[in-house]
Image 1 (cartoon, rainbow, N blue to C red):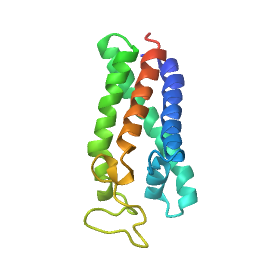
Image 2 (image 1 turned 135 degrees about the vertical axis):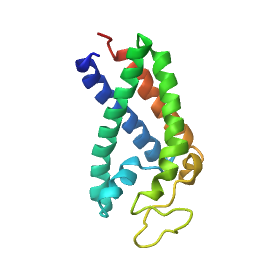
Image 3 (image 1 turned 90 degrees about the vertical axis):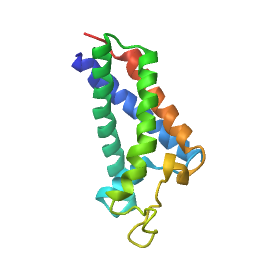
Length: 158
């Protein structure tokens, strides 16, 4: 494994993914704020939570990029097609398993069983995160595919 290439492009792809999701929220394509969602796990202060959430998401993306790089190693090469495929399935996993089940462990997120109140300040994401807007799944899929493409194009095999 080329650790230097992973260190540079894992971080670069993560920053781009995080930026795409933030831009998607800023242009009202989705109401999803990953930094707020992740940050409120550790802090009830919404402003502080956004900053903490950015760091948590960048760390998560950096760690997930190791899975992509590991797959490239197993497959004997990195290219944009392989990155896009991994990105697509990564997005599906996030949309169908990870975030819809987040209310089970998130202290400040409502669920289908517990409504929003003063303590549970975030609404439940719902299946495919549709509670955050009809375009949310597409934003998540596009961001993860671009993440994978960046890693597939720029990661240099040893």
